[in-house]
Length: 394
Image 1 (cartoon, rainbow, N blue to C red):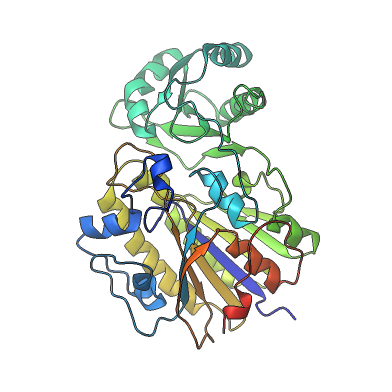
Image 2: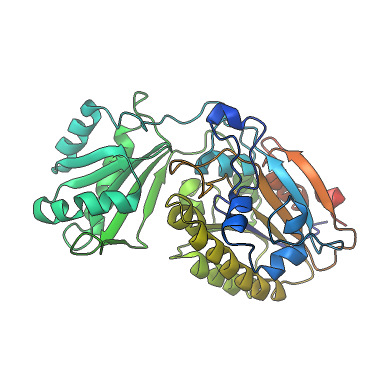
């Protein structure tokens, strides 16, 4: 018998809780996204997360550990190779990524690729190096207004990003250019995880602002995921934010676009008022894109506090047979060198109104515990890795 009719899974994009055992392989020794945010802000006002037990996951300055936490907590250790968005999310749903996605962080994309992209899109390119999205707009935004050239760039992630001012290049043209780039990057020489449309507006340096019309074109999952099993068994799989993009809509029955963290939580709250059976899967990307990559620990801390307020409201809306799971997909320590993700363990918080024996479960292997627990609850095949925690939730 299905124990929980609805499961709500929230990914706090990049909120790691301390270096992984193999952090040295990624040059990420000492990274701890949540701890360093807490230190930079002299603690955070997050009463809801504290009551759930986030302070029992580790030592975080100004965050209380509670003797009677309201949720089960754990730290999850990634078993896949990589520290990017797709690797983290795919592992949650049962896939172990053995080979990290290709990156062009140090060199930019080869001129052969850039030439083909220019030829097929009819516009020249500027940029083509690893940079933050805001800095590259300040450098080339005015140039694009004069010339119409694409602004292209990458990062430490496996991505090709195309920035275009909506006032001179239409979204349709930008999205079509992304489709061209996605087709080109299926070649093994340039095969990357994602092509990302980065539309923005503004007239001059210092005033350029990215819009909510971002669009990701990802590789398809290389095997069946828990989402596919849910859909095949006629359960609802509602992808919110960039979840549908991450899984190329595979296993998704409904997609909901979001414009911010707050909008994502508002959409989730609306869903809690609806009658569905299955999974609502939300990614809150602002933590990563707006604060982590931009190395803004103060802004990141404020965003966590804002989430905590929304979470308080959301929990009140849950039914007795609802399950809430909160986690992250990697780290992005805003106090660390560079602007890259960081190889960290991630938090896991599991809540239901009727839990009696809540406790901290320690360090557990693989993010896939999440998908395995979801599969177990809905009594469907788990097509990938991961061991269920369902029997421990009492």
